[in-house]
Length: 352
Image (cartoon, rainbow, N blue to C red):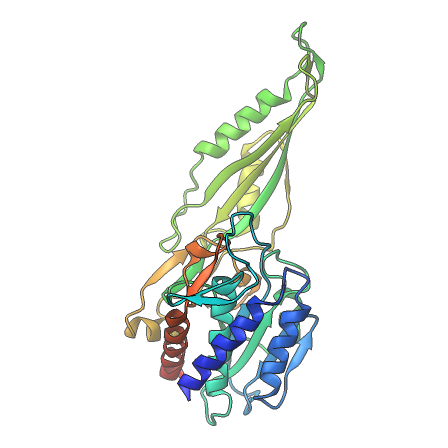
């Protein structure tokens, strides 16, 4: 049975790769997943381009596990030497846009869901969610679906982790900062230079160290990534705008980080969003311990995923390597998918 699931998963992934599915344009891959599941289970639901299914003997009195990964992709970069929409296996590598991030994870979770779909007397219910708009954190992705689902006790989020256990994930806080001064003529030295004010703030961002340290994720990381001011060489600019990318650990909420920044700086600070918080799951949680028993390692992930939209404990786990994501000539090893399905099933078997 597992071998058939593995073969079907790889076939599905090929179809997904060869179907354009940029964020908010996933209608083609949505149909592939819907048709694939409709041939194998009794009921599949849609919410926009999100595909949802429950195990056959779903019982409202039982706790529930969410199995989630996404089927949208970023746009291919200019470094591709292969057709990003051609699924081709060469030397054990399945090439194509979205193969590694996160198609391999998605089809592996679908196969795992199908393995348990008809089993009776499971300790947990299973909900499968193939979500849209993950890459751009869109409004019609997982965030729009979660309120429609039964309560979730914990989630496995399929992202490439080499099938190791990412028990924590950094959140993201992007700040638009504005240093305000007084315009004047550069020759006279009049005015209040907003660039100098911005430089002081930038210096603070580059040196400040948050007191709380996360065992899984380390320190909060703040990086100034953009800056702009002025439009003439002889005019002192009234405003200097700069952007800060902050990767937040599970030691802080985004609101707490924002408050600390605002208390320390004499510039205007505007967060683009406060909802992409850090996420984690206790190391002693049974799903984590099940993975550890199978030789999987634990670590903290610096990259953002749909975990940021979940309020329940969540584990990031999947075949593929995060370092291949968004690269030219993206690929995943076929054996990674096969082994990923086997490991997912073995881990869940320990708790189901």
